[in-house]
Image (cartoon, rainbow, N blue to C red):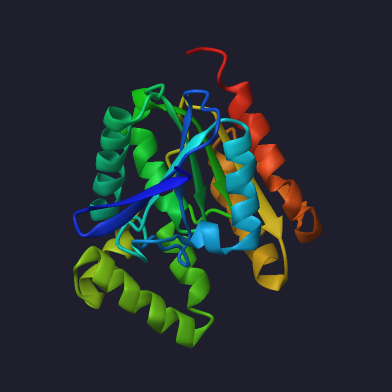
Length: 240
């Protein structure tokens, strides 16, 4: 069996199985394009992402992922479902109870909250092109009126509150991000076009209060992502 799809709280989830499992697992939390349905997921439909999943499988990892209510933007519902998915997978599969997390884009908002809530259950975390601050992300999107309106609609839906209340909460939100964790974290930012260079500057500002240094790669090096992530995960498997 290559993969298995199942539902939790009306959301589809998927587990990808390797031929020779090593007993280590990876939770993949996708960006805003991510989806999981009854047959497939975004990562199995996208050529570059599928290559990474295949590298994980070749290395013996069980990988699992959830639809997480679609464009959840780090909502508590999504964080809670990710925790429940972890519990279910740990119960049903033969896995070390400390897992790796790979999060991309918007998925980093969920991953950062899981760092606090699942401290003893995480082995290492890789964040690719992460959105680390919803507040800063919205400020940046304000430059693009159409995308800003769309983002606000997604946020009011994900957080189940009206626009005024949401904007008030964001104004009061802390600018500092909580990444001072004992769990090893690697941040990779792929530079591809003007917007990504702006985001890279914002990322460096956000990480200024932490001891983390992001790895920047040009888009031509994207095929090396799977190898880089694999190496980082392997380096954090010495202590069971």
